[in-house]
Amino acid sequence: MTLRKKAYYSIIQYLPDASRQEAVNVGLILYAPPNRCVVKTTEDMSRVKRFFPTVDTRFLRMSVDAVVTRLEEESAEWWQSDNLTRFAARLANDVQIVAPRPMAYSGTLEKELERLFEDLVA
Image 1 (cartoon, rainbow, N blue to C red):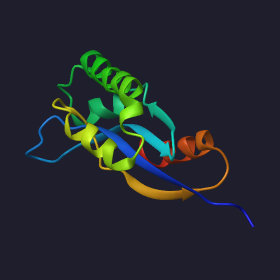
Image 2 (tube, rainbow, N blue to C red; image 1 turned 135 degrees about the horizontal axis):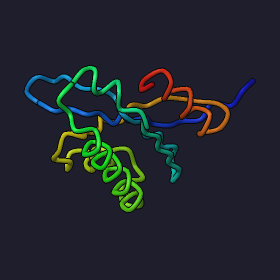
Image 3 (tube, rainbow, N blue to C red; image 1 turned 60 degrees about the horizontal axis):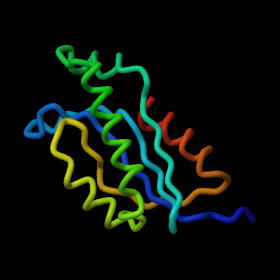
Image 4 (cartoon, rainbow, N blue to C red; image 1 turned 45 degrees about the vertical axis):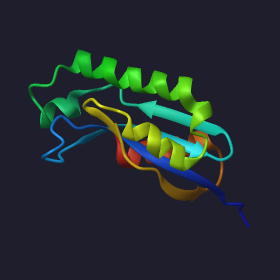
């Protein structure tokens, strides 16, 4: 029997107009308590460009990278999923983080990140 481990995932989205609630997934955060987190973002912004042709992809790349940097710098403050929710609520630009969702996985966190990334972002 394979041991299942508890984790949470959050999707990083580009949301240019919050009132319309139209977004494109551009990254994924996978957090495994008590203090393990991995993040992956898309390198190819062509999918975003298809949905939002006027987007400045260079600026978007910088915005996504800034969120990832903040995640890495402030991660010690949000090791619990409810704290990640508070972190996400403080984001005030077009790059947003969806509320964490619980999940279970077996194997490595990195392999699960790749699997989820393919399903939800790529």
